[in-house]
Image (cartoon, rainbow, N blue to C red):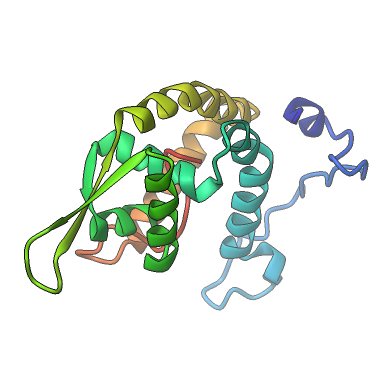
Length: 192
């Protein structure tokens, strides 16, 4: 991954010419009906495409280096930060569906990276997810590479662009969060 070459407008990983950024902003004079917006200009489309591209070019290489999938890395990072979370809270923070989180946790548990404990004696007992010392050690190995990859991408933007993007993303996230739920249903976060 050489994002500096891509930013300079050279070629993509497949050898295709990199897509130059649009010079005009269809959002600048946007009316309430969104007249003139193409689907490619939708915020959801652009963010989804960006997230997928970042996972492929930034997250996947370092995750694979440590034999982790992106969902495994995401859950490991969340548990390393919290040390222990109830299953429902881990699902909420990961913004993934329960089935994916459950499958991923079982794989991590099989590798000795997380510990799963049932709490209570009722049929609907609470599952508590904890990171093991082995999981924490792996997280400590991966995190410097994750930070470096993220910094490489962020530093492609000028400091003013970074501030504006960060503030805009935080603002939109805050406006889209479902009250009492804590997420907007998307992906991303520390682990990616």
